[in-house]
Length: 362
Image (cartoon, rainbow, N blue to C red; front, top):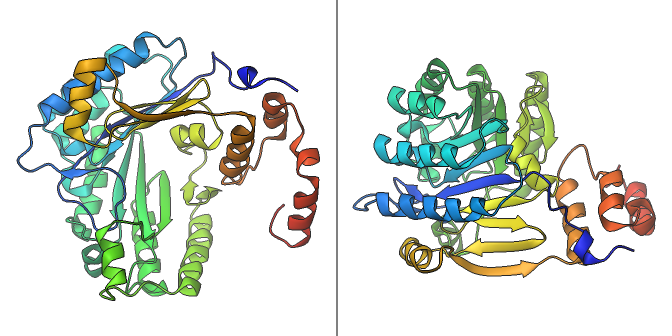
């Protein structure tokens, strides 16, 4: 049995995640670290992110095949500030090996100027939070854009040269029905995105939406109805040519999100920015979840880690099973055996047999 020191390859490629926490407003359901941009000077944070990026990559020998700039809404930054972040990123990363560079956007923050900037700085994929094509459902989610903003934004990205576009949709919204969900699915399909992510609405602790639920101001969607909408998404998207490759994700052939596959396949990843998490050489860390504290820590120490932990063999086993069973491709037996030193079919023979017999596992 190999020791924990040999569980993590030191030359394995790593994904790079950059967190930009600014949004127009804070949506009631969102649990990610983000803050309204109004009245804030964004340049100091961007400068700190670049310093952290420089520090982390300076001692990194791994190649970086995927970059994901999320948030928040990175495209809410001014064109000049966004350009400074993108330019610094591509100057610090070997772009000749980058296969996928994704930036998140909202329909209200897409313009011809920014689409041109993204493409000019190597971005080849944009993930846009459409969420719904009905005004009442967007209002329930406290989204600022209107359904009419979505199609022009997709067209602007395409005309600007963005190669792949993802649309996020949410089901299980209070007041949503299978009919309104079907409407949003078909409206999204009509726009021809390369990838569609369908997420069930979750009531995360500490969010305004959860507080509204606890105060009986919001009635959650019935679980049976939510399951019906999920199955409707699977069938509808399959008929439209989208392969269901992960619990919430559907893609046209060859358009799976390579960056997210790095997570789901338990590959290393670098996290930069406030609240960002990374996992390198079996050490997972998470940065401070506060912009000002993050900037001060970067200035003082070059990093802004709030916590970290070392993954041992038991944690790796748990995470490989948990993450890879999210994928329709399932757990990679050969990779698991090579890394852990045991065949999962032997290691979990009893629960595998029981779950297969119960129809819960294939």
